[in-house]
Length: 168
Image (tube, rainbow, N blue to C red; front, side):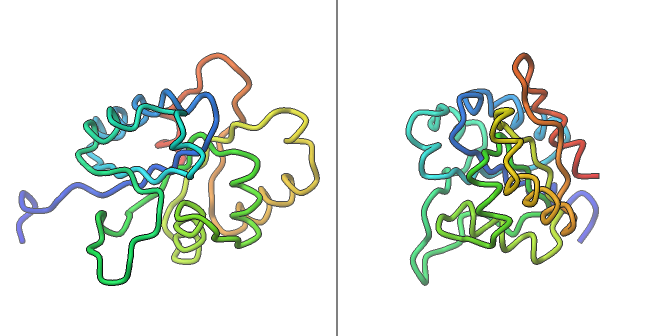
């Protein structure tokens, strides 16, 4: 295979249910400008109007994944070369750190963490939730597994492209 035949790396973008999720297209554009192919995995709640799913599917050229596929169904995405979680909610971060895989998004995050796939996270957590001891413990546990965190969102510009900078 020649260098010209090689496909660009594949990035999974995991989207959680936070108001800022409506801007995920900005992250996808930034990733595509950096030559990533992108597939989106969303939490079930994020699929309920937190972002424009049709626009994201058009932008990525892939269906958004939010539910498990049946055995024997084809895999809609290749294995990820890296994963970005943005926006990452309190619930998702804590369940992920605890190894709870009760949604496709969480199962994906648990699996890639165990595989050593680079993961960058942009939290979207209130000050009150960020002060909760379980959240602090979750950041330590995931950070110890190589997950890289950006600073939590506090209003203003979410800084979507910085998620890509966390991938190293």
